[in-house]
Length: 192
Image (cartoon, rainbow, N blue to C red; front, top):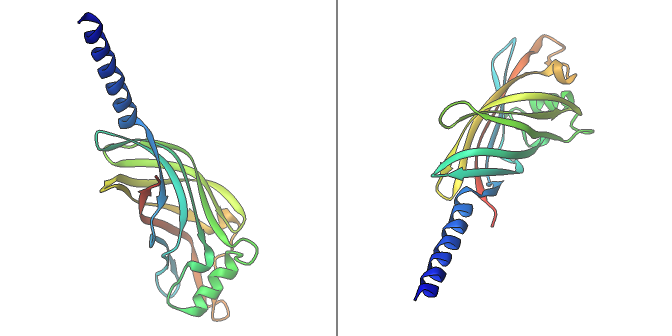
């Protein structure tokens, strides 16, 4: 009787230990189809947006009690040529300015993440544009959504920080501003 009680207690102890590990274990997620990556800026003529619905990448995230408790890694890449403004000449000028032929992708690799209250996080990492890499902080909101995780955020950068000359058009009469905002809006799905 005592031996059976001891085995039962041992069984429950092991069961609860493994459940605890599962609750706090990190999970790897992949960028779901049709994310929205947007680059926004200004010019002497009008404000502009270029949007991509293509990106790939993975993240390792820890959840506990239905909340994100740690972001352990994030790697995202997007093809420069997937950015579209709806104006072919503007797209061509942007691809040339971003040196798309020699550097076809914009990439982000996380260095660190800190919770900034609730679902808000500051995620800093190496952003590579046109072959130049700079450390950039993204302010993001990240939270569980169904089986996956939703991620929305943005960062302000300067083209000249990446040695990119702001594009011009119409013989230099229309000039793009140096500052732009990179916005992300995506869902991350668990990889089984």
